[in-house]
Length: 234
Image 1 (tube, rainbow, N blue to C red):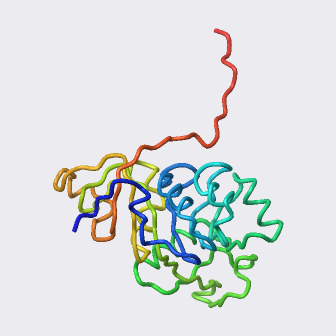
Image 2: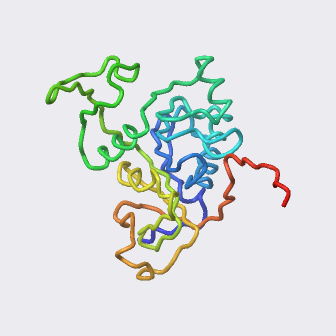
């Protein structure tokens, strides 16, 4: 059975439902599955929980799903670039499960590895540890964190082949590989879709066994923030 689909909309057909949990790869605007996010918005799915490092920016990435009010809950580590996110959260319109960034990454990795929980020192004595089990190891207190899983993971890769093997480009790898392992179904969008055997097997980051569907897309490659200064006179 072919894993290749003609469009992001086709790649999500039959996979989405109200109240589902979605993992969305990326960090800021780097390595986000922007076309699959648009397709998710256009599907009309509602009441979803999104697990992602952040919520994109206003008007782009996951910010589109916030504007359309399709997200009921975010599980994130950073939300500072999205004014609509802040507005909805402060107004009580959006639920937020906040995580230290390393903890979020490990929770996703644990979910993909079949590990239901783990102990970490990160967050002990802070709000993120309230209501969670604590345990001492070697005289240090640790807090129990649970693994994360999703109904759907949407990820972005630089190159892929028609069996779903993926290679990410530099920092765009970020959360994508671990999310690809932690969902019931993983859909990948890639910039270059190659024949089977074209990728160097030693360079593959995500084996195709984790990827159910794949689609070739074009990316806008926005810059999240640009800081410039006047050129000094010679």
